[in-house]
Amino acid sequence: MALLRGVSLAVTIALMAMTAYVWGRRLDMSRGGLRHLRKGLSLACASSILLAGVSTLWLGASTRGFNFLFVVSALAGNLLNATSLLYGLRELNGETVSAGLLIVVAQLLWLVFGFLVLRSGGA
Image 1: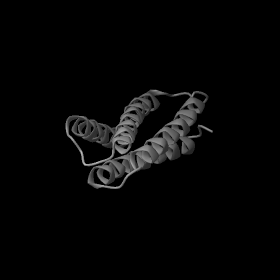
Image 2 (image 1 turned 120 degrees about the vertical axis):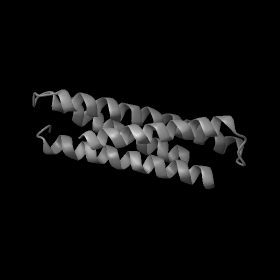
Image 3 (image 1 turned 180 degrees about the horizontal axis):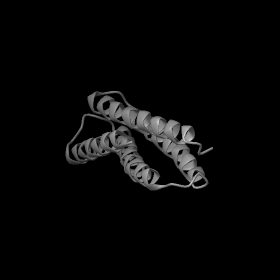
Image 4 (image 1 turned 180 degrees about the vertical axis):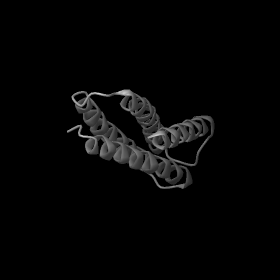
């Protein structure tokens, strides 16, 4: 679980750096594509921060009845991350593919978290 938190924090930092890059540079994209990329990266940052927080809370939770909230948060996090992937990949170029790879890694982390919560008897 500590590995999940560590990788989640690394992905969060990478997504924030990518967001700062996209906001700070003039990219060769259409205006709508740039707006959607920025929105997708913002959603992915929120999703990644949520994953780090929820996984930290889950590590400290000891009751089985409380795990239903973690199952719901895992589903919501997967949905939020999938939405950010759809927003981020409206156009295909180097920046969107790089952002898409980071978002896919975050999606895999959400899936691992959901599997761990379900395996622990949360459903």
